[in-house]
Length: 275
Image (cartoon, rainbow, N blue to C red; front, side):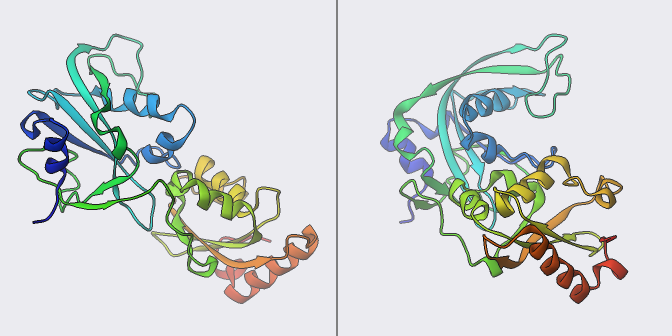
């Protein structure tokens, strides 16, 4: 028999008939992921506020909410982050805003969500298989017995080789903390590729926070301060690493390596580099 999440609920004396499952993944704001917010300082309270606000009565008829977030690539797992008792919602008033987008939420519902500690041992450790219906983010547990894929110690997956690493820029801020530290520890040359057009941009990471610093700049701003990319506000980029350089290499030498890559890939003639 394959162990599923309903078995875990039942073992904790929580009736699956009373539980609504919620899988959080939101791409509306580039560079901000629900997982990334959850692992940040104070992020648990932010996520609780985010999931409590709904445009319609999606949790109607359920007593409990079991919450999951989608982890960053390459894993993209559905990770359990908490069990909550649901209380009746209130109607949001004029002037209240969405915690993610800042949009007005007058007339929306805000549920009372009270943390229930019966499954705390699985928070940040248990991953389920949500199945093919990813667009259906809220489901009844009793109707959807989700198979358990893993129950892990609280450690991040191993970082891949630098030459194998790639990530969509809008997922960067949700990277595992140990992956952020690994990228911050190295300087080098990176490549951005427009996912829609294939246009390429070569850049260099020279600062104290290394490649992580540059990629997080792109995630927050969409352009990283580059004049040409500022003219493409709707572009979506995938980032990868072309070369790691010696940490002691001076900035002008790193820029020379960057120039070699621009010449090799012809990103001045046919890409997004203008110098």
